[in-house]
Image (tube, each protein chain N blue to C red):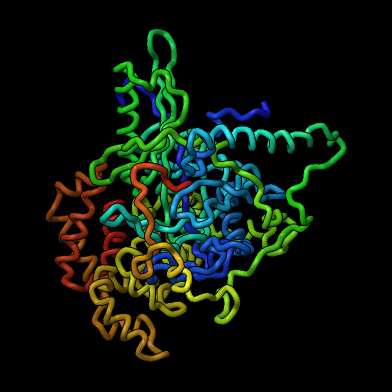
Length: 482
Length: 107
């Protein structure tokens, strides 16, 4: 596939803001978007002295749910740590995070091929819970403006192992992770709103004069769209290769570089040699006791795992082959997933349900008990065609709901959607068409089954509105089989 | 090992965003070294029979329900009172010296 002289070694650190009501360690409204600056703040998230942070149990629960969805191990004890860094977006000058005892350890996410089989597996290091920083706006005159509405918003960090081997795979992985946190219902994960953000860790490996070279890792921050993930990896990998080939400093550097992705210029901008983990001076957060989740009824992972919704990959494994590409758009919408599962459970074929979700979404969203199956029954029996139904679906819905006694068949009748089927007319039409098209009949009999569409079409024309296509098809087949 | 060098102090002061003079580097190297040596005395204690613990309170599972605090509770402050105490502000925004191209947030 690729003729590049190097292999990609890529891991992602993906942050997602949890959709809780309140912040992580205080009971301010969690609403970083669309509030006046510095309104959802209090002494805790402003980092004022003498305040006591108390973790949000719903945020802990949502983090465990993500871990369970990734099949992580949920340890018995988890704790909080302070990660120190000086930057105006962090009023405390440290972030409350988790270092060596996160809520979730390990895990994996599979990427599936179109037929639902596993194409690749990306493993996770961990998923931990921390607090988001405030927002800085760089203004004119050498100053920045600080808004702390986002400071203290619950943030999960999902850290993959460096299992990704191409820019395209990394993009798909991020899309898949976004789909997963949405499916689990813990984050809206809108990347444009910054609810999901991604840092990319990348280096490359290649053979040079008989030895395998591995370049030092660059961490690319601010990679905030799925497209940017793909581009930044390709760009940075090539930059590392070029620097190495030009005998640049990359040959002797041992530390990790931190850089930022510039969306406007498509450039990786090197910012600094990264502060090592020691430089963050992690230490256990003295103000927050550890969490022992198995001791709490509402956070016990053994109970929580039963509340997980069916995950996208499970649905794909059952229906990807049958439904095809439409399944992906259904999976991105929780309401559509509900319809999909509901009507399949009620006996409709998955392919039909997927088609209806695309074609007549408004009908499904207002349908009352039994409506959908009743309409499907009419279409299946040939009494009404789907295309005729779709054309008048708005009128149909209004009429059907105009009174309780109204049945789907009454409505189809009123709107002139019922198809008449006169067996005598059909039989004589079939006889005429067969007689007039000996070549088509011969083709069919010699194995060209698709030609039956032509024959049915001719019969429908001759029967002039007194035939139902499904029945005609059967009758033609029966006749030709004689 | 317990003796801090001037480079250690230079590194620490950078992490803490402190500008120190040469004279201060020397002074703090001596002072911090004695602090480290003082704490290092703990290493002579035999802790082989003591279990590691994760906090001094002995508590676990102190969590809060995800419910927005009510008006009038102590944490319910008027943000402008705090914003006005910042050295500079621009309307509701706190104003700081620009930090461009340097450190990026840890989150």
